[in-house]
Amino acid sequence: MTRPRLVGFSANLRRPSKTRALVEAVAEAAAAGGGLDLRLFDLVDAGTGIGAAWSRDALSLPARRVIEALEEADALVVGSPVYKGSFTGLFKHVFDLIDPAALAGKPVAIVATGGGARHALVVEHAFRPLFGFFGALQVPTTVYAADADFTDGLPTDPGVQARIAQAGAQVAALLRAGIAADASAPAAPAAAAR
Ligand SMILES: Cc1cc2nc3c(=O)[nH]c(=O)nc-3n(C[C@H](O)[C@H](O)[C@H](O)COP(=O)(O)O)c2cc1C
Image (cartoon, rainbow, N blue to C red; front, side, top):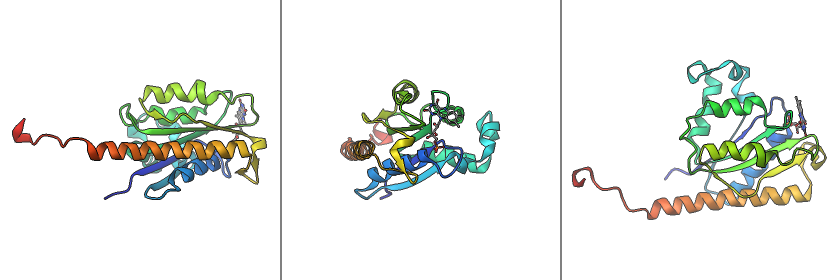
């Protein structure tokens, strides 16, 4: 049996990145119970050509790999630094290129980082409507962290760490519930019986 695939995606434009560290922390919390195939990507993996790709046909190979990994995931942890009060333009551009049906019913945890606390509600005001459009199963706990919540590039604030653990556990629980629902679903009728 193939293991459910959990994909972490961070819209950081440089490394090291606090957003990538936060996405990784939530994804690792989700995968802590074992049994998941965890993959992590960021915008640096997609390459600078992602911004020039106005359609799927124009995607470079590295960018296509990121887009396809997002579409093929069973669950996602997505994050972006806050730029000018919202997710970055390229974060939105990546999701503009994704098949509108690809994320329906999939567990998604939302993560953001900002310089300070002023834009903490970006997770509710910007990210939730986007993943609502996709019909994704957004977990209740979002994780926002400011510069002061990190030490040596890692999220060390106890409140943020508690939310990381909570969001990770929620993704894992939704994934397990989905797998259980699939396993107990009645088999599709054979073609001849239709
Ligand atoms: C162009 C730009 C715009 C930014 N706008 C905001 C902002 O509106 N609010 C905020 O809190 N931080 C803002 N920041 C700070 C970043 O969100 C913050 O440093 C973030 O944690 C960087 O994440 P990274 O380490 O993953 O790149 C901005 C940074 C840049 C470069």
